[in-house]
Length: 346
Figure 1 (cartoon, rainbow, N blue to C red):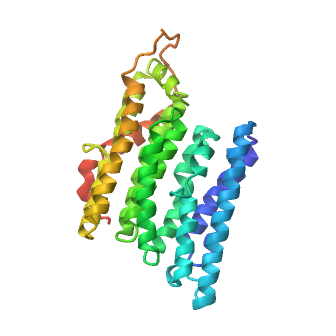
Figure 2: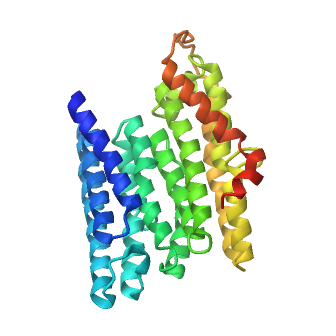
């Protein structure tokens, strides 16, 4: 990509995110979301390939629809109440429309259909941006309007997302699609707790970013796009693959690792709110996710390829990326002992 185009797109992404997360007025929040949508399009369509162009069109159409719904929701609320403030969303129809618009932005079920396809058509770094940075503005709007959202609708979407993210991830062979369904499942966990403890939603999102960024950057370094190539990647970078296995188990939410913290707190909060059945269903559905993370970990570190590989161990890697992966992997696996300190921020 042309360096100037890359600079403009990157700055626009930062600007759009900053506008949305700092605005109180609906029109400013909508403007930031639109800037974000337009800024990421050159990154998705950068590889001149039919799949990338298809992903770009799907992304644009879905995001444009979601933005239109968000604007319509805020306008109907302003029409009924005279308020353009984000925190003053009180009209029932507007609340339902906003819940649907944010669900489309985040890729919650039943509006998840675009997300795996767009990630599959993007490069690893673009897929990382779509899974993490571009979900920050919608999560912020969800956080600010958490008291006005429809609880029944959100809980149904949350359980459906956790279920579908687990089921659909089971039979995938492409790493980007597996991570897309993993993201849908995690978004379901965040949606389940938004109304009861919005701060916990943000904490879950931050920890999700740490773990997902670590996995994406590792897969990008080893050039692993599908499970078949994952089997041979350990010969190039054995230590990195061992670290990937631990990060994947953290993403699954196994106890000694960072990923256990948000799931533990969410189940605890749901139980406090006398939603034991929802908490039990969510916990059971996380076992589906655990299965495909274990499968990824198995392919990465335990499975031997059927034939000998010609790969030499890499003696030289990009130092900046290696340092970043080392820091992210450490944070993505070792934060659980710091949970008392983290809980003071909630």
